[in-house]
Image 1 (tube, one colour):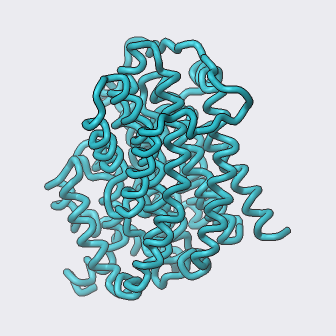
Image 2: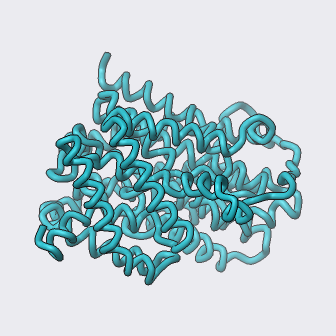
Length: 451
């Protein structure tokens, strides 16, 4: 079977799976994309197919995450949180379906603008790739300080860099002594599922359970569907006005060049920047929503492509989170030395297989979201709960950890998840900070202690 056929099949699989997962409110991108991509890598899929799978997954996920955000007033994931105010306004005036169409149409345009722009920018930056690779340890440590400073836990995040690095290196020493090799996969799987595991631990604790207890089920009112186009596949350029299309194009272009900034921050910044120039609450809300969802797509594409092509090491919030397995999935992909998609694919390969992933996801997720959003939401609300999704992905993580390191792998994974999740939940030490500390921990501890 040819590489292209495998890439198409995996892109179709990702499009279907993540179209459905996007319907589940609150599904965390890192916790679901890292283990899913890692499975594809460890099964031996060609690098081109792995990349097509990931690109299809992120577009499908971020198209359908608009459904719970617009129709239910619940963020589909973390990047959808800045859209809630405008989405709730549209719900209050009885037009959530309009908000949904604007969001999804903006998202699909943003993704296809971001791919070529970010690829060209990555090729330009690639001339500095050797410098970044040679100084990866200090760069990751500096990035941990920078990201920590701008995180919720600011000073706690910075103060805990060295202690958390010690914990990571201690666990690494134990696992290496027992197995004879490092379990880096267990560490980033643990960091990825940390927030989910913490929620489960809180639920099992008599003293902490009141923090998350609910006295009655949530109630949602869904507006009826109203179709305003003929055929199955609507034209996104006709769903948006000309001014909205221009706003989507401009913000997508700008955000395709800002690979070091938070996707959530960029989404909020660009949306409010555009919205402040629009008069009238309805026009402001619809323009902001289409722009913001476009930026979620463009930042994810850019923050995956730019560090992957230019440096080969994860130096963006998306790269150190959801796209982690594209950089580091030992023994197939590694960052020390750099041996991953950076060295295996050419810029033309990234363009071709990136387009394959985006086109397939668009064909699957876009018309589905536009035509069946309400029906799908009703099914999810009635028959699928978030706890089931959490349990499924923790099960997948356990399987991967056992595959790589047996019982030791599972213990290391859940030890890291417990420490990282509690730090995230109670002290605001974000997942991005933890990933940076993990990558810089070897250099940091050896520099400080001479080990």
